[in-house]
Image 1 (cartoon, rainbow, N blue to C red):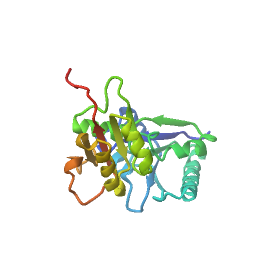
Image 2: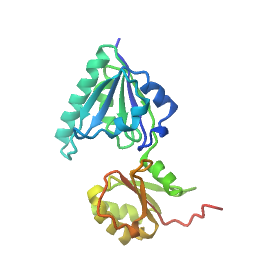
Image 3: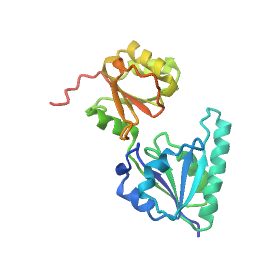
Amino acid sequence: MNGTLYLVGVGPGDPELLTLKAARILGAVEVIAFPAPREDSALALEIASPHLNPDAARVPIPLPMSIDRAIGRTAYNEGAQAILLHLRAGRDVAYLCEGDPLFYGSAMYLIDRVGREAEICIVPGVTSLTASAAAIGRPLAARNEMLKVLPAPLPDAVLRSELLSTDAAALIKIGRHFDRIRALLEETGHLGGAMIVEHATTGKERITPLAAFAHTDRPYFSTILTYRGAEAWGR
């Protein structure tokens, strides 16, 4: 009988933000698989490490940071096969996912590739959006307001149109797109209400009003939350 694949959200960085269910599963499974964009980089493994079964096998899944979809497909095909080797042998596998498995996560690409042969259980996690809102101490949106989640790599024209039509937005995958995103937020009237949160919930967390941001580094793991609505949170 094949094992079960658990897609486990490990949250944005603080190991204490894993759910009880996630911690229980990670302490029991025989195999831990995790995305490894670079040889020296495995953030999901670092976050989850206090909760892992010390005897579990570790299976790094190399995921090159490339916009070439063909390269990505090859990486996920190979990763799925590495996981299936253990599942076919009857071993349960937990695949670690930063944040939530189904919120812009690598786990979604394993569902079809593995689901034909093994049961999949998805364990939700805390997203960078909710963690950033908590760090700032400000709601994402309220009542009937719309919240738009916008990946920074989108074209300027698309981002401009979306920003002009919303009072609350969360921009993710900032990194090298920081300067153009800041300019677009200023152009669309969002700059004054924008906050940038870097490395939310970790020891490197930094919160800055975007209009005052003067740092030279451009962390990929950052989220910009902007609000220009009229909601009075205290009433």
